[in-house]
Image (cartoon, rainbow, N blue to C red):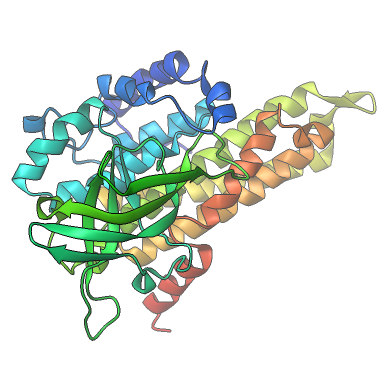
Length: 381
């Protein structure tokens, strides 16, 4: 079916992103995967073509683009290139909205130019070793002491935690009747005494994406680094969830589409029993089933993109799209790997890497179970 969600401007930008990836990412990606972290210069080069500052107002050097469709183009092209720059996508799709929504004018002037150029890379630290999805149960504290907060605690599974120049830390600054009260967002900058990066965690997939443990020991964070109002963080964390979950869905959908395309090519070339695998009825039926399910996912994603731009995408609908596409990604890639036979189990084949990378999408940005709970509440259950 013909897609109508993108216009000529989006497709022109797509070509620019495609060229950037072919020139500055694809030749180096294997080395980055081996190292477990990308070279930070890739953020500078992404800044040169406008990726890192797409939605930052023009007065700070950004693109001033309100539509999320350009972000979607970047995600789709990344998937098609076979690369996974999780730190970059978290920076643009998850972290930046908090700065756009809650940063003061002084903070904008201080951080936005560096973010636009790609010389300031950000991350966000929510998850703790003992809390997981239970953000209200976090134990990291920040106690006001004059013109600073004294921050203590630990975070884990932090995407971009090794490369980040600043990290937005969710910490408890007070208590209230509800355990969700008293959380605040503090911007910790690289080099602040007491801020330490622990292990770059070894993962099943997403090998080039740095995922770190972070610790904070008596870190004095200036009050001027408070993002938004004190004690309001739990509410803040909810405002961007529809976009964050849609970003995951876009990635999952593009991944399923890429898996199908490469498998169609593979079965046309691979021979067994004296003929190509594509001639077998089972192959045709399996790939036809994938194509049908992918078309349904594409319709959901594109509709959600339109609604996000219109400001009407609800938390429940974003959760539906996230669950459907990430489950779709798992089913399609599993079927496609099966059609590769033994070669599908070899890491030199892209389908094997895609299989490993896909597993986490049903966990981050809200687990499948958390998203189903959100959907059930929308049904009055």
